[in-house]
Image 1: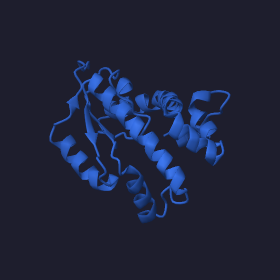
Image 2: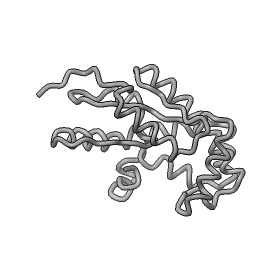
Image 3: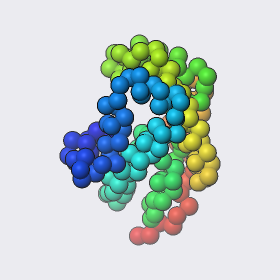
Image 4: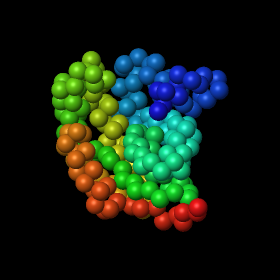
Length: 185
């Protein structure tokens, strides 16, 4: 969704949507430094972008539900604090993360196995730094998920595609947070 919005909006109109673009414009060495030494700065940038993207995600979800369709929404812009604010709609939500010490290896393997993976050309040093950031982001998401009464699903080093089957089972089994907001007709 962020990439679609970036095609129709401009940085001067919606600067928060482009905060990660500013990070991506840095040199690889600077990106690695920030992800390793100042993960809070990188995390905050991700949250700023997530809140900007949510302004498009929320009406999309509400329209789909209003028209009688189920919708699955995933991505780093889907934050527990924002999902918790959904009103007048039934939903199920669970949040994923990976705080494994082996996450660097998982990212590298995913890039090797999927020729279209955006990490395919990344250096080992960049992948390690990114894994550090993902672990920190996952810890934040876990804390926030629990704060708002959502289930957090720890991938714990499992490859993402393998974990999706377990996530689908959890969603179908009703073992995830359901909205407690009254639905108004």
